[in-house]
Amino acid sequence: MTDPVERILTVRRRKFFQVREMLLDRERSTFIFVLVAERLPILETGKAVALLSKHGVPIGGLIVNRVLPEDALDHPFFAARKDQERRYLEEIDDTFPDLPRLRLPLLPHDVVGNDSLQEIVSHLGRAMGLEPASTG
Image (cartoon, rainbow, N blue to C red; front, side, top):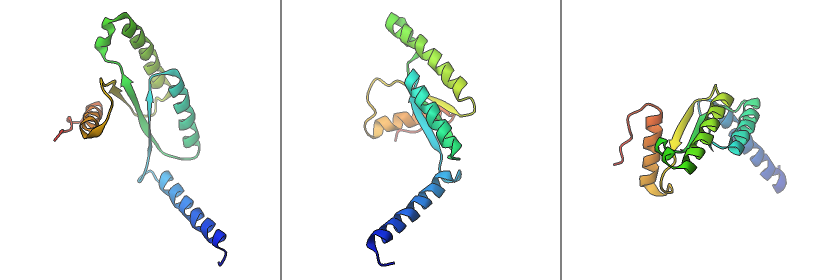
């Protein structure tokens, strides 16, 4: 093979095949969707789960992010948002009954840096029923 374009395309084709094999191998990869409890993200996640499942891509579960704390009910605005969120959380449970679902709380700050990531790891550990992750 002397044509440089053909050589490049052959290498790319081989790489795409390798990536496809890795994405379809349940021992090596799985997709975990992160969404918030709102209408559009639920619809988009449903479409993505259906499409990937159709092509045999393993789906490992869902992480529902930015869930309001229970004590947000003290203010009428947050009580209304919490009620709406509750309905969407139920819709997520009904729409994706066969997928594991974890919930992460809405944090009072952006997730930036190692300390914030450790906080997320701790929340995930608790949601999975594991011991809280150490922050050290």
